[in-house]
Image 1 (cartoon, rainbow over the protein chains, first blue to last red):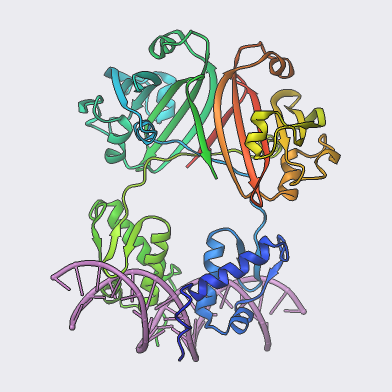
Image 2 (cartoon, chains in turn purple, green, cyan, brown):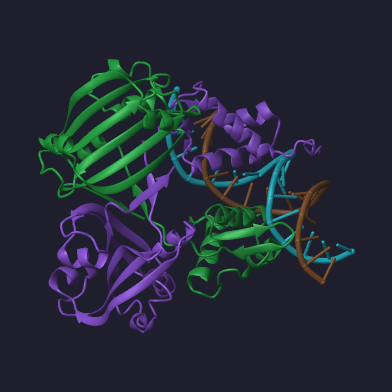
Length: 238
Length: 238
DNA sequence: TAGTGGTCTAGACCACAGC
DNA sequence: CTGTGGTCTAGACCACTAT
């Protein structure tokens, strides 16, 4: 059987994808419209069904199309205008800006879980937790207070790390591989203690990121990160 | 040729994916390790190469593996602990909470672009732009001031919409399909005008989302959204 | 040169939806 | 029932990498 002419390098399945996306982008096919069946595309492009199938399957994975067995393939409903903000390890973030990152661990202890915290971890009140408070600096300027509680069962060596050299995040990524996480971002007046650590005025607007991650079915860590509102922002692109 | 026994519904390619992911999750295969070749997996599972190829290709698309033609397949470098925060149309957000969303358009005008704004749009200073200021309420409580500038070329009918009935977001999704977007999230003291619209104290912490979206290669809209810090937060899960 | 991944074919059997 | 998508086979040719 003849191979497709080799001089134009674009694979056939990619050309079919391009064709389908083009029909949608141009507006000729609208949301919910029925897309030609695999058999129809096989005839249209003169290729095997496996090739067409790959094109359509990948576009389905990419949420461009939806498929219903027995019914057909349809243009997927328009994605809502979503925005994805990435929140990364702060040391990477700072270094990516070409700046110097330094950490100043202020507290590293084992402490019993207060009631609210125990609830978050799904542990009994008073259960032992690891607790750290670390201030992160960018070019010497304090940009984050990281107040973190850790489940000892997930990271037994948490207290033995040198947090001037690596971030809790980096240790936990190895010790307790991320399973899933929930977050919130708020704007709150800086409490006095936090304001002192960030060298800002108490009560001034601060950007607060809370993050709770689970690993192997257990809550691994609950962290609250405070940033000076006038110096820090989360950015992202889609 | 014998089909695989039909009673366990899991497709073969999925079982191969599960196997590969399991080896990595268990730590038996580490970041950068060489993964068995397609031929080896073909022998190990007693299936055809296309089936193995699909499993490995999909895991590559999912960034679990990386492949180098001629060299082999490897365990992908660990993903950094990223967090994705979704930012949605505020009306959908409020309704998803089962609450009532209402909009109060305070301003709807055509106005010349100031210098900074013109720069953002890539237009000449003084070029005409559409401008709207809308306050969004959740159960009657003001939760967002949306200050938006729109490129008339992208949404010529922008000023004719009824923004008590739909959000600018909803109109723009149809008029100027989202191409890409950049964002930032900040914590800032509320300026006096904004504070009045949100019925909060001037200077109190507010959560500010800025969003700039492009459509068909042009900057379509630049929006700044102010939220009362004590009433609003962005949340997400990964 | 041998082994790897990248792609493609021309069939096949099956489950499911709609008529 | 027909047509749809979901999966799988047993080959094939090619480009690339490592030795």
